Structure formats: structure tokens, C-alpha cells
Length: 124
Image (cartoon, rainbow, N blue to C red):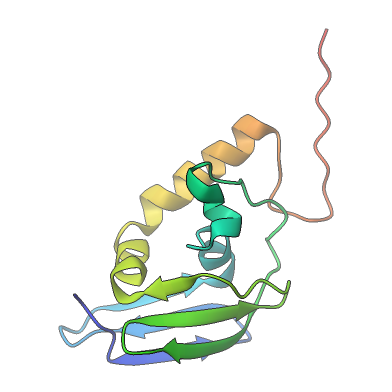
């Protein structure tokens, strides 16, 4: 299980930086971490709930949860779900694919990352 050796919260750029012993460094956007939350609220007990309007979300706190995970607190009030070391490493390594899948899901649902935008669909 890869465990980060450095964890930095960059508040201005809304990035969580994870560094590993082998020299790998990943910067994960707060929005990405929020929409990929391992919480039941997001995962929906087997039926994932698409997260919309999280474009401007920020991380306000990062704390260790034992020796196996991080608890992340976001400025939209979301603070449930523990990000295990394994899950964080997966999120980092699969960022491009997971992010594109999320964007595709938003498009298919006619939803937006921007909380100020409501997408309206007209059907003939």
C-alpha cells in the first residue's frame, strides 16, 4: 500500500499534493476529490449520486484518520468519507480516466460543474 510521505494543502490553488518515497508527486484538485468522495452520500450505497456544481469547491481541512486514511473537509460542508491511502493512490494514478468519465456523466445528465449554471433541455 503506497503511503504518501508528504501531504500539502495548497489553499489558493485548491490542490492537495501527495508525495511518495519513489519521487512521484501528484496534485489533485479539490473538485476532483469532492466528486470522487468515498462517502455513502456520493457512492449512494451502490448507486452513485452524480455530484454537480462543485467547480468552486475548496478543501478547508485535511487530517489523518488513524494510520490508513485522510479525512477531508470541503467548504460546501462535505466531510464524510475517509480517503484511504490506496484510494488516494488510485485517484492520483487514474486521474485522467476518472475525470473524463465524470465529465461524460455530467454531459449525459445535462448537468454542469458550475453551481451558477442550470442546463435546460428541450424535447420535441
